[in-house]
Length: 284
Image (cartoon, rainbow, N blue to C red; front, side, top):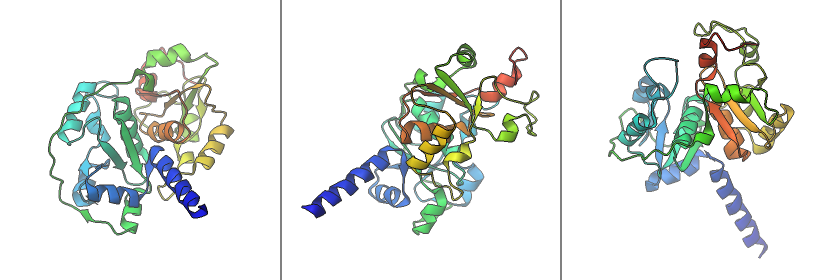
């Protein structure tokens, strides 16, 4: 009886871990073998063509942005959905993202897919390093894809416009979190796209690297909870995340929503690039 209880506990914990949006290489390999998952390489096309997980398709975040206007702002839901469908992905697909191990590109895609209504999105913990560690197949050959239809259902509660951010600046029930480095937050960065250095007034700084390990894995739930608590970020508040382009905001979104189960988290899509571009916006 005791052994059965232990086995049930392990199964429950494993199930919870999958629900947390982070999957181990062994879990992904098992699903890949049975054909029950779509693996997405979030790396650049040049990297994908050199080496990628066998069976993976390639989606690079920059291909999802408008060609004009503020850098890194999303195309329309219909345009992005078309790209997803061309990769054989539907809103009901089980999807696992990986990148070069920094978690930035995978995190960005994770948020974009969730925002557009994908129901089962995950990140490969440890990315390519973890995959190669268990000696699973890699290939330079592009994966043959059967086109599908991705039906977008944008969730307005997951995204923030600049107007929305402005309306919440002095709201005590909202915490604006800048996930850039302390230097960038303090106005010491060399990004030529940012002419007015600094941060949005009222924002607090918590760099995204605080929720990931150097080897590309995600920190434990307990470690992330401690970091978030120390920063003064609480689940009873609405959280709005941003960086320069909100690429780095994605993995913080994963940490808060999927791992800590925060109920009200948005990403400011235009991010600091959009804020900086409007001379009427104050900078601190």
